[in-house]
Length: 287
Image 1 (tube, rainbow, N blue to C red):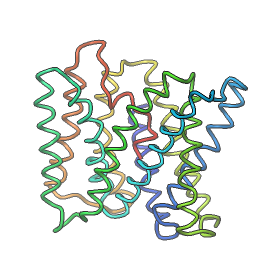
Image 2: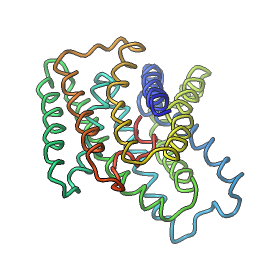
Image 3: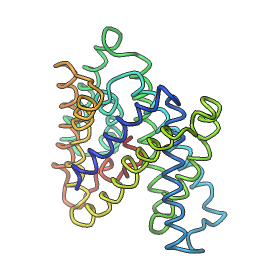
């Protein structure tokens, strides 16, 4: 289920790049978030009824959560418009991993932090000759917002029941990003091809994988799930190669392996009962 969910996310991201020529990254993010919100919010209201509506005291949490979702997805789409999908996911993935390692007091995590940092530095050495600097910067920014999402999602998780927080957060994110998408391409967002691809991206990057995550986390610990999540960068590179024809050189594969291995090592070596930050993240951040 983890492999299916992760691959679904990366296929969704690869399909999103097909939208860029017609609607640009901002338009693609708008379609993805609007469709995702249009699925999640009605489901939440249908199953939870009046209990799903946030109290006034919780509106600040919803707004902050939603704005972070919008910014993170926009930064990531701007990144994959400029650099290979596998590289973008590797750089982005280092954000929550570094947050997890930075807040850890375990000595082994120093080794994993160095491995992750070395992988990102190795990618940095390819900036200019092979990788667009702006793309790498956007991927790093997406990683920062991913780390921020971890903090805001924890708050939302404590403030709301079920999927209420995520559903309202997606609604805020859709409202926040829509003006940018409309200003960027306007009526191009309403063509049949754009709407069809947008719906597919929302399903592949949000609805299907998030449901898989919920089923998985009922069967395995967050610790083991964190190890499994390390498939992300490799499957992103695979999706980029098969769907978009984006090959990686040896240096980029080594860097990918270092970052993914750091997450797997940190998760596997964590004490039982300890939580791994990246493993608690919903797929809403991944692509």
